[in-house]
Structure formats: structure tokens, C-alpha cells
Length: 265
Ligand SMILES: Nc1ncnc2c1ncn2[C@@H]1O[C@H](COP(=O)(O)OP(=O)(O)OP(=O)(O)O)[C@@H](O)[C@H]1O
Image 1 (cartoon, rainbow, N blue to C red):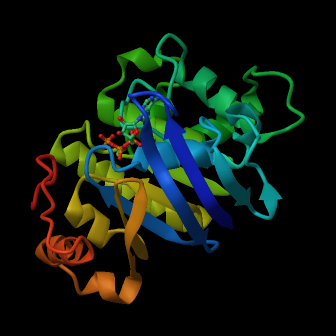
Image 2 (spheres, rainbow, N blue to C red):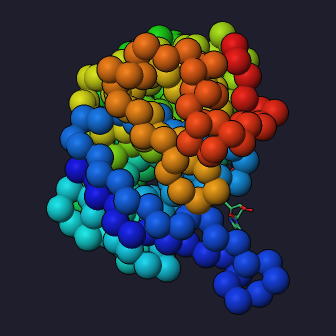
């Protein structure tokens, strides 16, 4: 479903601020895979997500989604294949627009020939049905401006907007990190539900090791612009966060995983 080959990305090349963000990334993602990605600050996680979404064009290498080479295709053109939810609940939705207007924009993105963002009764009914699944009572608040929703409600709405057009790839960029534990759990549960419902091929960056181990069928660890661990489902199931830290140390020849944000909760 997704094939990344020889991808390299360097920022500020040839200057004193040169930074190799991705060294040589090779990754094959099968249809229906749900991959969790962890890594220390500056490891290259966001850069990798941006290369997949089209926000960044790699210096070398290729990105192929569902057999189509999208390496040089911009973010907007890729939006029909790639859904994304960001860490910041404010990022995925337009606060001054109503819930139904936000949904209409997301809906139009998935339909190549839809020229209007307008909301008719047929769409409204569809949106109500979809919103009901979030269990947030949002189906009765179609005309509420999104800016009035809580962070958790906005993330739930962002998740719906990113997925109901059934993208080829769903990117989740630390999408529960800004929420309190209760709301984060709600979004985790909702994520599992929509990923299963639409059989979405998913890549989720998380800073939470428990989450990385409990969700998905494969775990990648990035470090210094490279993939240093690729753990399959069977092995992942047996691991605890401490085992992951040990695996990191082994992969780095004894170097410890010094990352303040990583909580062994
Ligand atoms: N636009 C940019 N210009 C210059 N350097 C950048 C840019 N974007 C990222 N970098 C650098 O590239 C490296 C990888 O950054 P990236 O944001 O991908 O890491 P990350 O794993 O997502 O980190 P974090 O967990 O802190 O978000 C870092 O050293 C970062 O400072």
C-alpha cells in the first residue's frame, strides 16, 4: 500500500545548520497494516510523516502509494489518498466554521468531482450518522462552530474528517498527546474503531510506549534519521516498555534512550 525507497531529507544543506533529518528510509507497508512509530526528539518522525503526506518533497528516493508514485505530488493533490490528524486539536479543523461546514470540506476532498462545499439535506443526514459514532452528541450540534468544542471533541471530529472518505493511508501525528488521560483514551478507542471499520492502513506517531506496544501490528523506532527497530506483531505483543528500552540500547550499542517525554506509564 505504501512503499518508501531510499528516502533522504536534509535541511539547510551545505550550511553550518545542515541537518540530516532522514538518512535512507526504506519501508514497505502492507494494506491494513497499523504501524506505531516512536523515537526521541529530532529523530525524524514528523519529517517522515511530512514526506508521506506531501508536505515535504524528499531530496532522493521515492514514495509510492497504492502503486502510484506520489514523490513529487504536493500535499493538496495527495489529500484524496492521505488522511492526517495532528497533535494540536486546533490544527485539523476550521474554528470559525460550523461542524457541518467542516465536514462538507472534508467530504469534498474525497470526491474528485465535487465542486461545491455546500451542505444539503442528504449530506446533513450522512454527517449525522457519522457523528453519532463518535458518541459525543455532536450529531445534534451540526450548526455549532468548531471553536466552541473541547479539545477531545475536536480531535474526534478531526479523526472523522480524516477517515470517512476512506483514505489509502491514515497518518496520526501524536494525536492524543495534547489531551488529558481520559480524553486521550477516548480518542485511542475511537481510533481503533475507525481503523477496523474502514480497514485503514495507518501510521501513528506516539510518545507513549504503552500506546505504541498496545496498538497496531508493527512498531518502528526512529533514531537520528533512520529506522533502528522494526518489531513485528507477535514480538510486540510480548514486550513491555522496559523491553523496548532494552531493545533500543542494544540497537544503539549501549547508548541509553534519554527522552524526557517518554513516560513508562
Ligand atoms: N524545516 C526545518 N528546517 C530545519 N531543520 C528542520 C526542519 N524540520 C525539521 N528539522 C530538523 O530535522 C530533524 C528531525 O526533525 P523532526 O521534526 O522530523 O523530528 P521528530 O522526530 O518529529 O521530533 P519531535 O519528537 O521533537 O517532534 C531535527 O533535528 C529538526 O530540528
